[in-house]
Image (tube, rainbow over all chains, first blue to last red):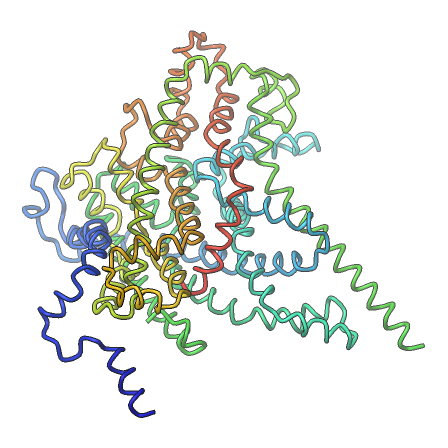
Length: 321
Length: 301
């Protein structure tokens, strides 16, 4: 018995006590096989990172990165004083919180109701239709929304006018955009998100449900006392994971819904990603854009670490590191 | 007595839950479908009817004028299709191969550097240089402005897909690799001859995720391809058509349609239908692969 244990340990670490170069040589094929991926991430993810130095200079196109004046934290100070950083942070976080909380609640609700459907055909068609919005590009999402919201031809105004109300100028009214964006997000992602919860419900032992039925539990009780508690761990893990990304915005959604230069809507719809994009493409303000990105990366990193700490507390096997 | 009243009450609850289930799911599914029908209906509507009644699900005055203009001078749409198809096929083939190989290698318990490399890959989801340095790298240092490679390369891999592949491979016994090694097979041969054929369901799932990414790609296209490139990827072309009337007028003028007769709105919709059609038609057949990928990769990833 003891002997088997030691053999196992040795197999677990087959290169213990072998020199570094020998180890490298022994792993050469596997190293070569992972080389394309390593190269990919080095070039497209790591190489841009030193570029965040831009955040600390006053970038000037003719001088280039290295000759532009070093200004320390001046760009950050500017962003704080003019209120941009605060506005972007609040917008990005509030939108994401709405997406995460409302999204998960609706996804769980849909998954539970799907499970109550008895007609297999109905269930299949419904699942297919609800999954469909996930498959289309952000560009098309923008067009679909325009079909409903356009002032002149949109369905919303057609309906309002036919009921005797005044048409609304959606694209110049910033107050209603949080509702529109959250609605579109829920429309697009609910079918996708409910798949995980539905799969979790499928993993529930049928005998438990049957036993509850014999004991006289009706559908409502089944849902409240068996299915919801069963989904709780999945919910908590998904919640913590998505909270980790609370500072990352969905550029495609916002950009295509709001439009490229509809500045009237910026107060309620501008998020970090759209701001950085404009800083780069419209204002050529590379330093401001980089400052916001650096802030986003650092603050976001801190949030992920915090969330992971909570995951570790609730279920260690799911923690990231 | 008490028992029967209770069972009646149970039956009413049972019924209520069922009604709510069918009602809500039915309505929500309908809501997911309606916007597409609206685009379809409008694409067949005359511009006159649109201006009078607005967009509608069923065209009041039916016409195929918009489609005729799109297809009469199909240079743009055909060019867009060719570029998108090429990017999707090449990107999926290369990306899938690398993702599969990386996922397999990082799952090998005897690979010394697997934890370090996994972390190297995973870290990119935690910290990034952001858009500006990425843009400068692509345009000034790699010189990829107006080059299709700028769209192809960044879409090849993602940590999410590598992790998904890892979880797929993790469900296979390591003994397969070990016994092949004892038989004298090299690591690459094992991957090509044994692992790849055994993971076809996983490969289909991951391949479809990559393919969908390329088909719907517009972000890198918009960043790196300027509008004067004639053959743009489909979604970028659609984006240009939606956001600038100019793009539509150019393409209508090519079909000798006078400017005032150009059906601006219905042409947007027609192009949207042409650009999205294939994916929606394929969708019912490929969705199960995505469902599989989501359930495997979600909680672990």
